[in-house]
Length: 240
View (cartoon, rainbow, N blue to C red):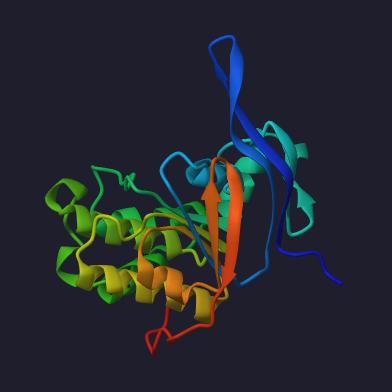
């Protein structure tokens, strides 16, 4: 039997605190199958964002094993981890991390530039993604000219532009009104269903929790529960 896509065993993450340390993740055992959509929930400080940073190879665990597609990440050096992030992951953060000097279109093009995609192809896909997120009339605007919700939509388009294997999202609908939030949820669902992208979402949004394959609850740095869901709707006919 093939190993699950993501396997965490005994993952701990500790940080210095005074003369000792504080454990934010405590011996996490977790598996994620390829193509799953997983919602991660829990109170502030429960370890969700730290877990996301470990999964995205933005942070190294203090102890334990993290295997991605059978590859042990603890043996990788900084250059290997950077390549892994670039080639496999898309990130959607609470803070949008857009480049202020670039337009919305230019920001969405960035991953395709690093991937060496031809200009015409990357520009066409960036424009199409922004259009599907209701941003057709804002493609030439810079981040400072956009609302928070509009900036989030640009960040989402950028994250999915290169069709990543894994999409890691930290409260992607947190700054959005209900209508825009549903558009974003449809986009995430579409990417998961149509591209088979493994999607992990830190969220308090009940709609996302209902659409996820599983909801994993965190408390005090540990997995406190897992609930499996049946999918209740499809992403529709929009192609991502």
